Image 1 (cartoon, rainbow, N blue to C red):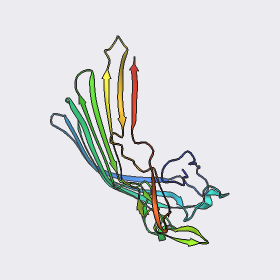
Image 2 (cartoon, rainbow, N blue to C red; image 1 turned 120 degrees about the vertical axis):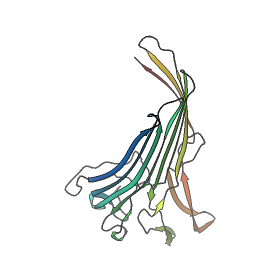
Image 3 (cartoon, rainbow, N blue to C red; image 1 turned 60 degrees about the vertical axis):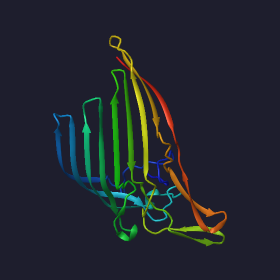
Image 4 (cartoon, rainbow, N blue to C red; image 1 turned 45 degrees about the vertical axis):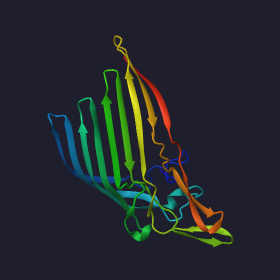
Length: 253
């Protein structure tokens, strides 16, 4: 997928494999320990993994994927690796249930022509990834749940400096993906009401609130000259949705 932004857009385009773009290949090795305890009330697992990747694709420095007549000429190819540790614990029964998961990981690429041929963080690299889910079954009709997620911001290439050419500001870039988007986190809340079963027909109502505390997670960050002092630069954060309420009706038969 070719994209010229730090997040997904409708203008992103997919390209297929070709003589230059070969199918990506990976080999993954993992070692884990899994156990249930407390009369199977609790589930626990820990797993370490290492993945080697071939035929990784990335852009040349200053690539132009929008107007280039041959987009493949804007790409370079190399190898990648990903490794990390995953922890998971879950309470499966009782009025209160839920789980906690945590991943510590790295995802990197090495491509000649990028970052002086040194390893650099891939766009998908996230050092920390946390999910915490709690579910409370108040009675046979009502249940309540909360889900909190946190992850390190994606690796991005931001300007390290700037200079002026004929009155126009030109940004100077150094290390590929040497910066980070702000950390992403949010809390989702929901309540579910199960209606009384009628024969084979069963239905429920769900009331939800996405991003309950209104975190303005960055969708994109752009840079511009400070209107009061052109020698300074300011970063502008664009966020999409603060709160998203929802009502859902479910039925099955």
